[in-house]
Image 1 (cartoon, rainbow, N blue to C red):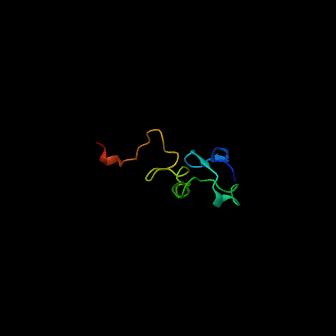
Image 2: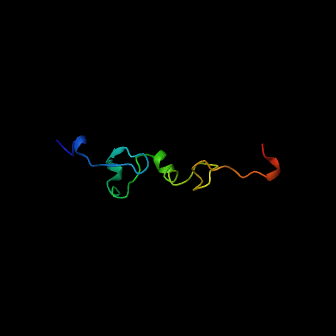
Image 3: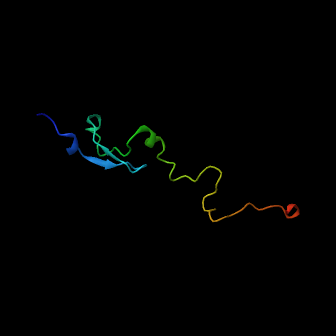
Length: 73
């Protein structure tokens, strides 16, 4: 029997989704540099650091927009 059994291959968690992924032959030379389990996670790598669209960083906690003094409801 040649090679290594699949259950004995090294694995590591994805930096984005946290799912474990297993070593692949095409990653043999760059295994230490591989961080993401898929192209989708690689594309989403910066989303965790960015706030959702339309929100200001640090404005959590029910902050509301300031209204003009003449337009109070």
